[in-house]
Image 1 (cartoon, rainbow, N blue to C red):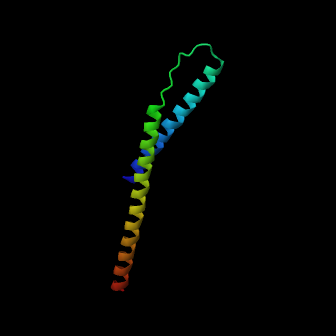
Image 2: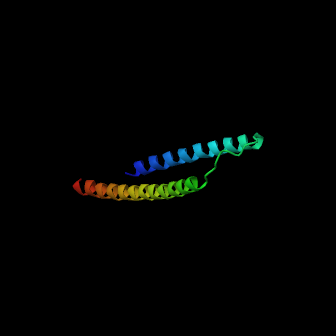
Image 3: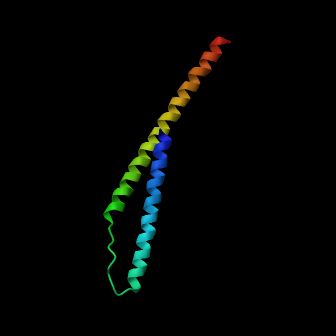
Length: 85
């Protein structure tokens, strides 16, 4: 499940990167243009950035919890094998 969150965070980060590139191109076009016909909306990207950060935090905490669980299971398995010998 944590890999899903990681992929979602990567997808959101890619969206943010594309938006930043589009914004950069719009600003470059505006500097040399006479017309101000392109609207720039910063709010959706700020929302996506916050959502991406929250998703990344959830993904990192899920991965950490999974690693701790794996360590405990490995210890239990090691004890069970040692008792069987």
